[in-house]
Amino acid sequence: MGFFAYLSRMKYIKRWSLMYSSMEENIMEHSHQVAVIAHCLGIINNKEFGGTADPEKCAMLALYHEISEVITGDIPTPIKYFNAQINSAYRDLETLACKKLLSTLPENLRGEYEKYALPDTDSYEYKLMKGADKLAAYIKCIEELKGGNTEFAKAESSIRKALERHELPEVVYFYEKFIPSYKKSLDELDRE
Image 1 (cartoon, rainbow, N blue to C red):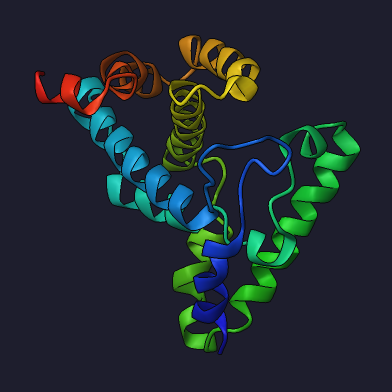
Image 2 (cartoon, rainbow, N blue to C red):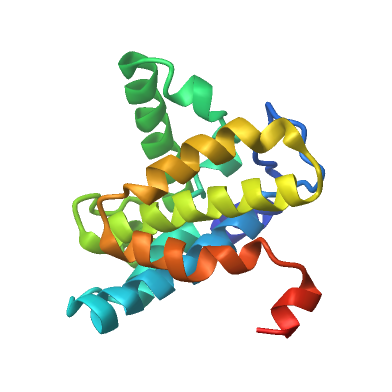
């Protein structure tokens, strides 16, 4: 019955392992940030675009989207996407890790967690969560650059371009309305 003990170890899995970070980030912190943004994207879908997304489902998908990494570790993006064969093998490994984690739950609880750990990747909520994941990566780049760490300049540029032409209008909306505030100091935010 180690499911929650495994999840508590998310705080030990560092992100951005191939890059110098002035402020380390773990997958537990990252999952929380993605959940907050994904929840907002679900609300934006409903309030701004007349959609029917479930904001709470968006948030739950985000909370569980990195759990496989307590077994696999955080595999850097350049490795994950080096080629189709590696990407496919990595996705299989993620699925196996999630199944291993789910097996540590009592059987009558597994289904409640499986829908978030092994989600329907065609659902609109899943797509919104992936958009939130991209926005969180961009926020990390902004924070590092604000602190003078130019190691994130290339990542910031490529992620910014992807966000500016993102296929989901909710992601573009969040990018245009909320991202500029991340570039401000606390004093500047106080004056808003």
